[in-house]
Amino acid sequence: MDTYTNADAELKAIAEVIATIEHSQVNELPGEFLGLFRQDAIWTTAHGRTLRGLDEIAAFTRNALPGSMANGSVRYELVDVLFIRPDVAAVKARGQYLTLDGEPTGNPTSPLYVMAKEDGRWLLTANQNTFQLPE
Image (tube, rainbow, N blue to C red):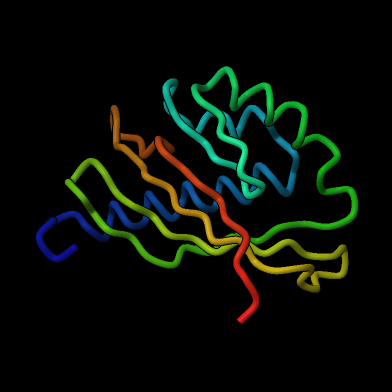
């Protein structure tokens, strides 16, 4: 990250994408979530289903997201960023589903997002969410 003069600004922008993922899921906002993706994005769900392109991701999201937080919530944190190029980053996050009281449920998730910067915005491009095994 030291080789990029604007690394702090880019890290902040990437952290905002992670925060928007959390906000859109907690508040069950499919449109906000889908606005984070490139048209040709790939998304592999935590259960191993691969979705190709925004149309497939949208159909899945509009079916799965509404009502998904009725019994809880989710929290995401940015763990690490590897800038592959100034406009491409591998972003590691940690997700944790929570009860309505804020207590963790099940194992955390360990998403990896490959983001591309286009027109000044970091967009989800090739992504995989994975359930973390207990330690």
